Length: 384
Image 1: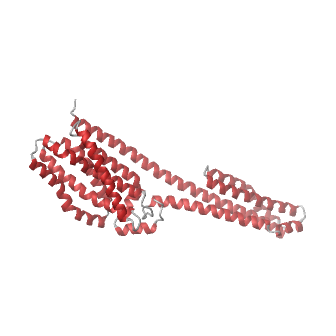
Image 2: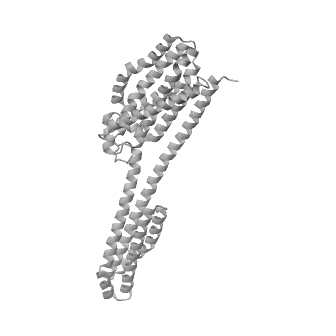
Image 3: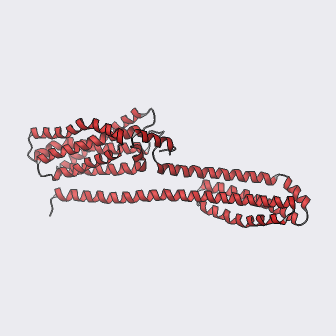
């Protein structure tokens, strides 16, 4: 039977791969759902405009016949009557079960019915040779009042549909600086930060014990901590400048994946010196992820609330450290390798959950400052 140092990370990586697959499927489905909603709303708008045009044709034909007694005006009137019922029925079907849209559609249908009834009555009077009475009825202004009310209701529904289409397109188009501190992008930063601090909390408890179990003396243990601390010391300023210039999305993803992946690799490396070398790799991952997360916090916090957001981020990181310390102690009592696997699982879980929360907004928000400002100016705030 394979030792636990082999089959535990294999199972964990398999679970992560399965999770990544389902996450990708969910993301694709969400994007398709958004596109389908935009298409449905656009079809509603098209049908609504058709209905308005048909009713307008009916009114024009009826009034032309009343004023001229020319029967050629009856042809567009009768054609419009045949189309209006079909178009109205199609509009009701497209509205589905949305209460707000259905309420507006019913008001439009009621006004349309009253208006068509008024026009039909006056046309019938004129056809019976009672043109003076028909003209008198038309001159009372009821038809004009109904037509104006009908057009206003159509305009109101069009405005509602435009807002919904705009929100969906803005949601798919990109990031704009939020107006509330509690938003999905800030939740993404919190999630990623907790995953990063979880690693530190676990290693504080188990690192020295694990190195000792491999035969390391106190000098080697100190060197291993130095190997981890050196890359952030040297690379964090450079990485911060690179992120400001080129964007932080790739460093964020690579850094978090490096932190999580190191958790699976530590228990299976063959010697103490490999632990020291791997510490350099994980330290580099921290140097990439940390400034990227700070950028995300700055971009996801409302104007004037950045310090508040940074405080909340630090508090969440402390919670992650506490939870990791407790979990590491409990897991180490079973096997010293288990806390490292927990770091890997927690790191990848934080990464997948963070990307799921941020989705397409995350990429846009992590772009260089100039491009991010262009996105923010071009896209309405989707209330995220």
